[in-house]
Image (cartoon, rainbow, N blue to C red):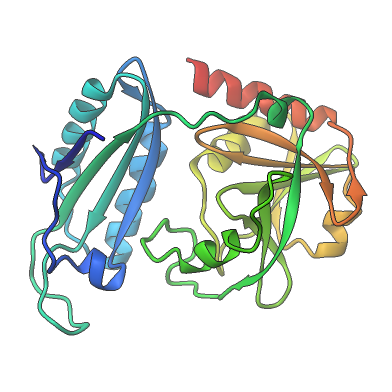
Length: 270
């Protein structure tokens, strides 16, 4: 696997890195086509927002140039960008260290074509997302809730799992964001308490509204999900998947889902 650390090819990392010790950092996973990272501006905006909120002094111009150069070498596939606070001493107190920049390349995941065509089954995860507004929306390095949730199922029948918060509200998939459609209106969960504000979710909200589709960001309870006309998942690698089954509830692939799929397809094919 091709990888860079701080702008140079590398296969190892300092044992003093705070990302390893404390999950003190952020990451982005970008689709790369013809040497170009897709949805670049949204990925960087989320990264820079996270660095500002965590007080990690990342140089944005240097990071952008480095990422573009790396993706140029990748050509086709996936680029994972990790930013940590850098090396530190023992203890939680952040040291005045230089942020560390890690870039890794991999092949694009081979998702079954039927996931997008006919839809996927959702697993009901028992792990609940803790409410932490300071970190809500960020793609920070502490993904233990998602690790534990993904360990709840091993069968091939379920392509994703549904995650709720400690109050039972619907939040997201383990690695996806979620939309529901009801009476022609799109809704997606409010992520101000917990969850990851995905870049594909952001693009779909903006572009759907521009096309005249009614969109709402709000709290969604489990019974509202079950009563929806259609349910769909999205992320920046696979685009949009319809949800066809969850806890015995079955949905057809609806018109709102197909419209969002068309938007995502354009974003990921261009």
